[in-house]
Image (cartoon, rainbow, N blue to C red; front, side, top):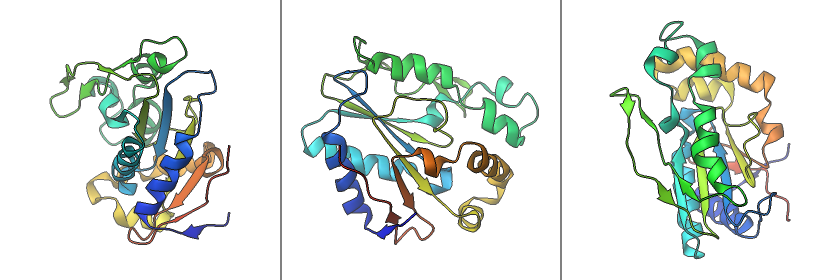
Length: 214
């Protein structure tokens, strides 16, 4: 895959420009965008940049972190607190993401999206109120292990870190998750599934694959 150097600012602008010209596959007036990457890839930063660019274009945008849809501790830690297979398979409540985020964005959906569901620190429901996403609006979901669930992203971005960069930038206490990301690379191949790939081994000098025109 050929990658071209780009700044984060320009990347956000290019992604927003492309997304602004897209329509949902099911004809919905609302868009779902996905920014996939390990926590060390800092997908929240790119999601907020893209959201800002889309707002400048007049779109209402809601940013939804996948970490807001973690399952309760009793389910996450069923096989121990540092089990990489559990992290890959059962930490994130994909059913709730479908129900509370993607379902309301479908054609004929209510547009009422829940920004987050569970607080992993208190291990309680967040009780965050629903947000109304108007027609013409967009939701950007960001976080790890997002691809491979058939989420209906109009545009999907994978922020890639090499194995070495991922290890270096992952805190020691979280390195037990690394086998989960190795498995994700092998089984899901996110760089092949994503519409856009961003290499972020050097956080100051990203590179991207570009995006085809619709």
